[in-house]
Length: 486
Ligand code: NAP
Ligand code: MG
Image (cartoon, rainbow, N blue to C red; front, side, top):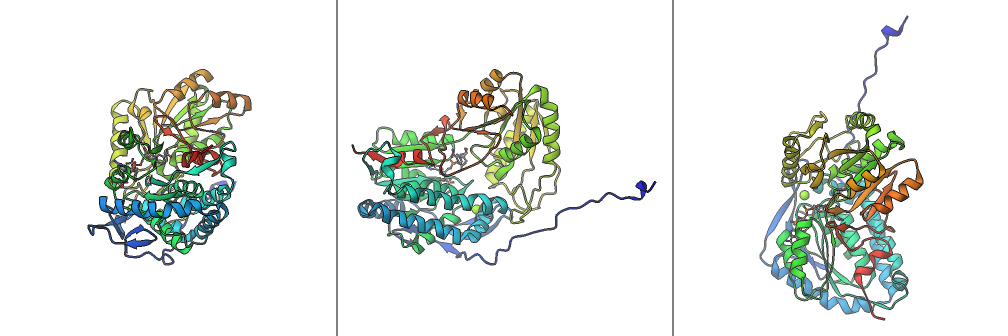
C-alpha cells in the first residue's frame, strides 16, 4: 500500500502584521479642555507605552486639581447652550462623531491595539465598530428622550464626570459620552492612565465634528485625576467603570451630596454548560468568554460550570482548542490573545494563579513561544477548583478560567449565584425552556444563551450586587443622564 509514503502536512500561519505607517500620532498631547488642547497647569507629561513592546508611544499630560477645576468651569459655561440646542441639532453632532469614528476606524484600531495590547482583530472588528454604533444609537434617541422614560418630561443633569478603565478604552468612552450628550449634558471624561490615546483621538474627532467648545473634555492623568474629578463641587453626576474597590471609594466620597452616580464594576461571571448543549459550539463560547481581550473583560466567563456527565469531554475539547490559540504580537491579524495591559496587571494575574496552585487546584497552561519583551500570560485552565478557592471567588481579569462542576439545574443556579458579583452569565443548552428558567433565576445583569460576550448598543448592560448599579446601553442607558421634570 502507498499509505506509508504519505507525509502529514504541517502548516502554520505566516506573519500578517497590520502596518502602522498610516497613523498620525503627535509626540505629545495636552489636556482637551474647552475645545482646545492645553498644557497641564503643573507641566507634567508622562509617556504611554505599548505593553507588547514596552516602548513609549507618545507623551500625555497629567491633569492635576487645577486642571480638573478648569475643565469643570469650561463645562459649566458650555452646559446651558448645549442643553437648549434643538434635539435634532444635538443628534446631528452625534451622527457626525459616529461617522467620523467610522472614517478613522483603521487608525483608531491600530492605536487602540498599540496602546492597550489587545489583538488588532478585536479592536478592528469589535471595539471601534461598536463605539461608532453607540454614537449612532444615541444620536437616534436625542429627539425621542421622552419615549425612553415613559413619556415623562425630562431635562439633562448638567455637568457629568466620567471615568473609564483600560480594557475597552474607546468603547467605554463611547458608552459614557454618547448617552450623556444625547440627553443634553456636557461631559468630562477621564481615560485610564495606560490607555489614553484613542480618547485623545476622539477629542480631535470632536474638533473635526465642530462640537461646541466645552461640551466634551478629555482629562488624561492617573487615579488622582479621577479622585479630584469626583470631589469637584460643581458637578452633577459621576459615571464610573472600573474596580469595585475604587467604586466603593467614589460612593463614599459622594455620600450626602446631590450628585447622581452609576457604577459599572467587576465580575466573576458563570458560564454554565449543560449536558444537552452542542458541546463544540459551547467550547467556542467558553474560549470567547474567557480569552477574548486576554480576559480583561468585566463580564468574562471566568467561572466555567460544567455538568458532571460531560465534564471530561468538555475539558478535553477545551484543552485541545486552547492549544490552537495564537498568542503574541497584537498587531498581527492572526493573533487571538495579545499582551497583558500592564506590568501591574500581569503581577495581579500571576499572584492569583499562584494562589490557585497553592490552594490545590490543578493548573494547565498552554505552551507557546512568547515575545521577549512586553507583558504576556499564556491561556490557563484550572480544574479541581473548589468554590472557596480564591480563583473561584476573586476576579482575575486575565486569560485564566476556573472549572467547577454541578449535577442538577438547581445546583448550577445556586453555584452561579454564589458570588458577591452579578454582572453576566452564559447558558449553554439545547432546551429553550431550560434556558429561560435558569436565566430568570440568575442574579446577573446580562445572561447570554448559547453565545457569550455579545454586545449591542440597544441592549442594557449593568450589574447586580457588587458589580454595581445603573445601566448602560439602550433606552435604559438614558435614565441615569436625565431628571424627570413632570
Ligand atoms: P480601576 O483601578 O478602578 O480604574 C478605573 C478608572 O478609575 C481608571 O481611569 C483609573 O485611573 C480611575 N481611578 C483609579 N483610582 C481612582 C480613584 N480613587 N478615584 C477615581 N478614579 C480612580 O480599575 P482597573 O484596574 O483599571 O480596571 C479593571 C476593573 O474594571 C476590573 O475590576 C473590571 O471588572 C472593571 N471593569 C468593569 C466594567 C463594567 O462595565 N462593569 C468594564 C470594564 C472594567 P488610572 O487608570 O489612571 O489609575
Ligand atoms: Mg499604553
